[in-house]
Length: 146
Image (cartoon, rainbow, N blue to C red; front, side, top):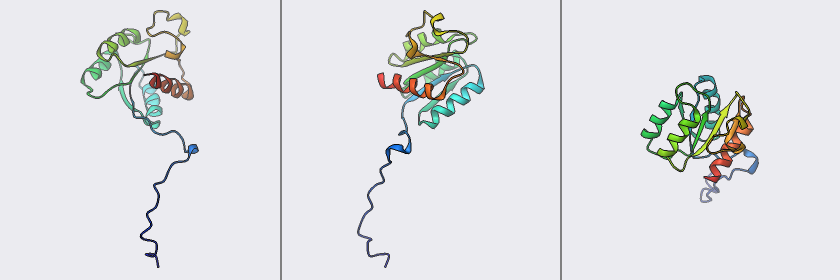
């Protein structure tokens, strides 16, 4: 009896709109000298389907930029780090990967204190501790621009 409808192929299942976001395919370079912050943000971004490269400092991030053969779409970096700060890192990353989007984060001061950030503006700044939805929203809007 089970073979009666064997000739009918099921339609592929289409996810409904309320099943959550479709996974993203972009790659994000996440740089923070605090392992717990890297781990938290990395797991949030991975859960949304992004590929995440993690670095603990600017030197390691630049090495990843040089060695990673596929595109890196966004740099998410802390501003205040030992040895090389976020803006200096961003400057060098942009030279290696001109089309990359930049998103800074800091828990220290108001974003307006960092007047020399390139690029500037609230779209490119996250205040720590980061709100998960704000991280998702800013990452997505920058990637959509790129």
